[in-house]
Length: 339
Image (cartoon, rainbow, N blue to C red):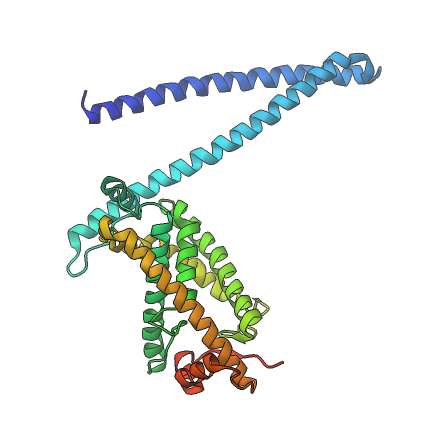
């Protein structure tokens, strides 16, 4: 029997089992309804003389309540599972059809593959960064740190007519906020990658808002500074997040897991297994050192703003290499809050 015929045979087998189970469940539902109705009528009749005289009937009904509660939980679980599976099947077929159509009609840029196709390639190649693992998430984070800076600088050029720095670290075109956002969206939305867009929107709305709020809170608590303030926007929460940008995060959730993440995953797939893990750890060490150094330099800048002079040779070296003019060029939107 060929694979194709086996698949059809399996579908027929599942259909037969489903039809049989459905028939038995419908018959069981009728039996339960009839039995319970009869018992409830008997209970109502006995209530006039006192329910304590029908203890066995009461106990039988309470046992049936336990069975019905257990059945309700089981059917609720089955409903969720079957609904999710049906949604994933429809989404996978739709995305496969779209990919086929786009592949036949593209002229300049090859269309991004659907997530299901990427999953299969990662498994087939036994890639070091397959799935939702540390290696995959690090590369998503790293690319996000870089890509976010590039995109926002281009956006600033288009909207304002000039290029302005959008980096968050002192060495290299990286910004941890974009990287953490990319990492969080990938981590939490990964299980919805083959699901309909509604799940991606809701997930992006929640995850993005939480990340943005926590980043703002952390920056203000640690450095006493802010890089954005939505206090003038309607439906804002402490000026850290607002409804409009949370909706943008929801839209980004869709774009991310359906459009951006698949392309990033394709790039990551091109990294050879032999060098992938070593390169990952080298870049991780670099990003940690860069982040710590950036934190120290920004902290020293905040002290200079307060009028605190350098106390030792390290602080004097920082002041020489990263004076206020350099820091203002690196972080043009960073403002320190006054007491």
